[in-house]
Length: 157
Ligand SMILES: [Zn+2]
Image 1: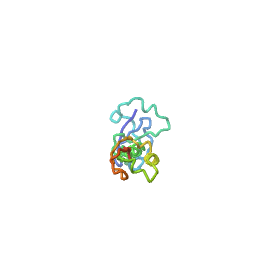
Image 2 (image 1 turned 180 degrees about the horizontal axis):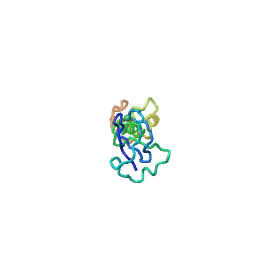
Image 3 (image 1 turned 90 degrees about the vertical axis):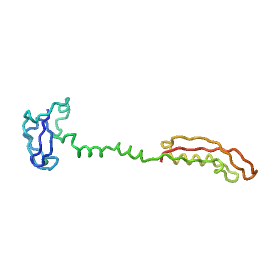
Image 4 (image 1 turned 135 degrees about the vertical axis):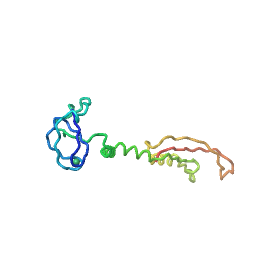
């Protein structure tokens, strides 16, 4: 079972296992030595599940209560998964449009090559959607409107 008491020096609220009563510990808040008091009805905490029995015997016999504000925020900062998700939300949805006619040099159709390079640069994990589209353009040689095609890439970056 656990018992709660306060550090006589800095008044930090502490929780210790009752079997640690009488032993000297260093206050995690002010680093002064203090003695864990004997279990009395006023400081015994309600038994929560089998938590104290489940821990290995070499575990420290005191802890700062979980509801303590500063300690909780320290724990949150230490979680790497939160940092990763924060970086993900910083990514924005972007659109890249590749028109076939923009990729045609004299005698060379480089559309597939350019589209492949762009997709590889963006990366599969960031590519949300690749959408084909048709458009009309004025052919400079024949001065006629011709149909052409392209792709629109929607991605995160
Ligand atoms: Zn203290």
